[in-house]
Image 1: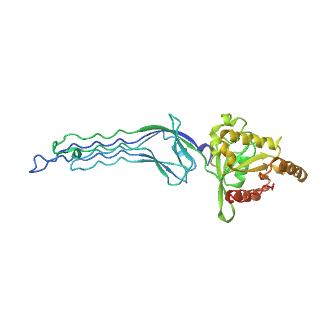
Image 2 (image 1 turned 90 degrees about the horizontal axis):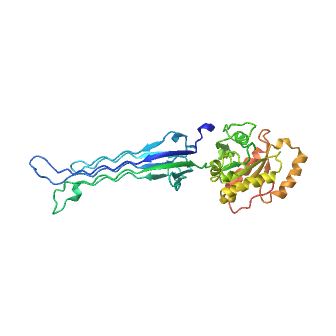
Image 3 (image 1 turned 90 degrees about the vertical axis):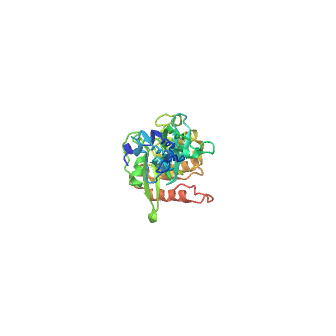
Length: 344
C-alpha cells in the first residue's frame, strides 16, 4: 500500500430513504360498486448501514464518496399491497473505524469486528393505508398516512489502525527501515525527518506460518499531544496496538531522555497507553563495537529496570530474529506469567 493511498479521515453526508405513502384506495371491481377501503401501506425507506470488513486497511475507497443516499420506500397500492422497501446503502469500513457526528463531535459508535453491522440512520417508516382506519362509524376512510421523512447526517469517519505492534519513535529513528526489513511493506525511506507522513502496515511472518501485524507510526516530536507536528493525526493510531515498540537510535544523545519524552507524549494524549506492553529497541547498533555495547548495557540496566530492551540493526540484519521471538512472546504470553525484563 502506497503512502498516498492511506486515507484515515473522511467526511461524508449521509441520507436515509423516506417512507412511502400509504394508499387511500377504495375497492372497485365488476358487480361491486362501492367496495371498502383496501389501500396498502407504504414501504420503509432504506437504512444507511456501516459494516466491518477485515480485508480493508484504509478509508481510501470513501475518499471521493461525499454523498451517500439510500433508496426511498415505494407507495402503497390497491388490494392492500405494500410498497417496496427502499434500498439500504451499506458502507464497508476497515476494522477500527470510529464514527463521529460532525456537528457535535460526539462518537456514535465504533466498528471493530469483521461482518459487524450497525445502522447509522434509519429509513423513514412507511405510511399506513386507509384499510387501517376503517371503523363501524367510518367505513370508507378516504385518507392515509404519508411516509416518514428521511434522516440526514454529516459524519466523520476516523480510522484507528488495528495492529499488534506499534512502532514509536522520533523522526528518522529507523522505524520505516525496520518495517521494510521485517515485512513486505515498502514504506518511503530517506535520511531526513518526517519521511513517513501516514501510518504504514506490514505483516511480520513468524515461524510455522504464524504472523502478526506491525504499524509504522509517523515520528513523534515533543509537544505532539498538544497537536504539534502531526499531532493527533497519528497518536490515535497507537491506541489500538497491544504492544508498543519504542525505537531509539544508538547514536542518540540520551537514550533514556528520548524514551521518557516519547512516553510522556503518550501519557498526555491518553494515560491508558501506559498500560500497554512496552519493548525498547536500540537501533543502528552496527555502529557499536562490543566494548561500547557492553557499557551501554550496564547503563540501560540501571535506566530501564523492569522494561525489556534489545539491540538491533535493520541494515546489518542483526538481532531481528531475536526481536521477532520477543515480540511473539509478548503478544502471546499469559498475563499471569512474569515477563523476562533482562536486555537481550
